[in-house]
Length: 398
Ligand code: ADP
Image 1 (tube, helix red, strand yellow):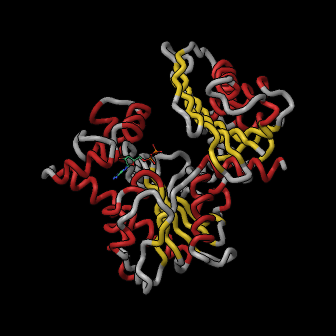
Image 2 (cartoon, rainbow, N blue to C red; image 1 turned 180 degrees about the vertical axis):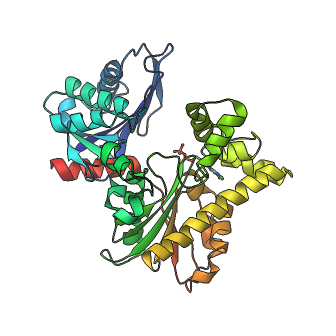
C-alpha cells in the first residue's frame, strides 16, 4: 500500500510517497513559487539523484500534475501509474471546533475547511486547493484531512477557554486550539511505545522546538494542554514569534509608533522571538548560539529566555497533570541541540530529572537521554509528521 502525503502552503507544495508495508519513503519533493515567476519542482526518488524541474506552476492544480508526472517519469519516477497510490493524506491546518479526528474528505469537510479560512488565512485556502487538485488529478481516490489543530481539541474547557467575554467564543470560536498537533500526536505516541509506558495512563510532555515551537501535555495520548492558542503566536519564544506577551504591549506600541494592530501583530509573528530579542542577529538557533559564544549579550539573553520559557511550561504542565512520566524533545532544536536540552533539564532537578551527558550527545535518533535513576524519562524522539499523516490515512481508508 502506497500513500501520498501532501502539505500545501500558499505558494508551496511538499509531498512524500510512503510505502506503508515498511513505512519507507519512496520519493519526496517540493514545489516552490507556485503562482509566482520562477516556479520549480525538486523531486527526490529514494536512492537516486535529486532532479530539479523548472516549469511554470500558476496554480496548485498544475503543481499536482507536475508531481504526478515526476512520480511516473520513466527515468526518475517511482511508480508506473497512479493506480499504485491507494489514498492521499493532507495536512490541513484548521478544523475549527468541528473536527478533532482525521476524516475522509467529502463536501462537508471541504465546507468546514472553507469556514475556517478566517482562522487559518494563509494555510486553509492552500490546503483546500491541494485537496481539490488531487481530486481532479486522481478522481475516485480517497483524500484524508489530518488537522494540525486536531490533537489540541481534546483539551478540557478550563484549558482552552480564554478569560474574555463568552460571546466571542459563541460567535467566532475564539478559544485555544493548539497547533503542531500531528507532531505532538506522533511524538507522544512514539514516546509511550519507546519508553515502555502505560498507553492509557502515561503522562507525557512533548517539547516541539523548531523555528515554530510548542509544548503539549497529554495523558494516555490525549491532550490536556498545549501552548499555542487561537493562532500559533501564543506560548514559547520561537524563531520569529514572541509567544506569550501582555496584550497591552500591542496597544502601547501602536500608540507610540503610530502603527495599527495588524502591523504590530505582524511584528510579533515575524520580527520577534529570538530574532527580535537578539537585536536582529537571526531567527536560526544555530546563529543565536554562535553569537552568544562570541560574546553577544542580547543573543545570550534570547537563548536563556527561550530555555527558561520551555522550563516554565514544563513546570506548569507537570502541575496540570499532577506529575509527569516522560518528557520528549523533538524538531530542529529539540533533535539536534544537546546544550538546549541539557539547559532545560537543569531547571527540572526538583522533579528528579537527571540527564545522562553521554546519552544526550546524540542527534536525530530516538534515544533515552536521562540517567537510569532519573525519576522522569527524558527522550529524544524525532518527529515525522508525514508518516503520522500517512498512518492516519491508512487507518481511515484500509
Ligand atoms: P520548522 O519546521 O518550524 O521550520 P525545524 O523543526 O526545522 O523548524 O527547526 C529549525 C530550527 O532548528 C532552526 O532554528 C535551526 O537553527 C535549529 N537547529 C537545527 N540544528 C541545530 C543545532 N545543531 N543546534 C541548534 N539549533 C539547531
